[in-house]
Image 1: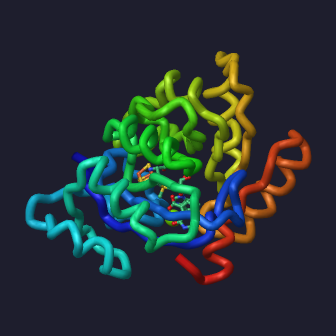
Image 2: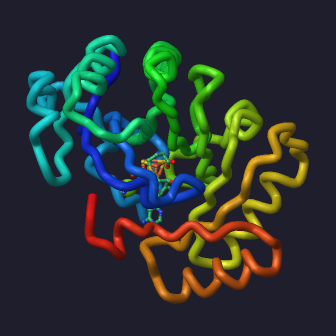
Length: 222
Ligand SMILES: C[S@@+](CC[C@H](N)C(=O)[O-])C[C@H]1O[C@@H](n2cnc3c(N)ncnc32)[C@H](O)[C@@H]1O
Ligand SMILES: Nc1nc2[nH]cc(C(=O)O)c2c(=O)[nH]1
Ligand code: SF4
Ligand SMILES: [Mg+2]
C-alpha cells in the first residue's frame, strides 16, 4: 500500500521538466530530516493522521494527513478523466520508502510519463520507463547515506545549495562514481534565497551545469 498525502494537478516547477503540466502524488513519511525542508508536514506517518481515501483528494494546504491506496486504486483515480496532464510526479516525503514498480508500470502502460523525486536515501524501485530525479541529501540529521543504486538510476541529479560547502559535498559524492546514464546535474537554490541563487548561477556557468529554480514559488502556485 502507498501512504498518500495529496494528489494535485499543477505545473512541474523544478528540474528538467519545468513548465510541464503534471499531476503530483505526494507520499507520506521521510526519515532524512533536511533542516530547510519545505514539506515538513510529510515527515511522520502517524496512525492518528490516517483518513479515508477520498479525503486526501480534496484537502488543501499542508497537513500530515494520509490515506492508504493500492497502486491500482491510484491508477483508477489518475485515469478517471479528472486530470488533463499526462506527466505524473511521485514525490513526498520520501517516495522511495515505497515500491513504486506497479504504479509506474501501470501509468506508463497508460501512456503517461512518470517521474520520481527522491533523496537517494532509499532504493529506487520503479518501472524502467520512469524518469528519476535524485536530489542527494548528504550529512542530514537522519544520518542516512546516499545509495549508489539511486545515483546509478538517476536521469537527473538536482542538488539543493545555499553555500559552497554544498557544492563541495556534491563533488565528493560524485567523485568515485562513473554513472552510466550520465545524468544532467542541476543546482537548485534553497528556498529561493538571493545569495543561494547567485551561487547556483555562478557555479552552473563555471561547470556547464543546469540551474533549477523553484518556479512555482515565484508564481505562487502549488
Ligand atoms: C520536498 S522533496 C520530496 C522528495 C524527496 N524527499 C527529495 O528530497 O528529493 C522535493 C524536492 O524539493 C527540494 N526541496 C525541499 N525543500 C527545499 C527548499 N527549501 N529549497 C529548495 N529545494 C527544496 C528537494 O531537494 C527535492 O528536490
Ligand atoms: N509545482 C511544483 N513543482 C514541484 N516539483 C517538485 C516538487 C516537490 O515538492 O517534489 C514540486 C511542488 O511541490 N510543486
Ligand atoms: S529528503 Fe526530501 S522530504 Fe525528506 S526532509 Fe529532505 S527535502 Fe524534505
Ligand atoms: Mg515542493
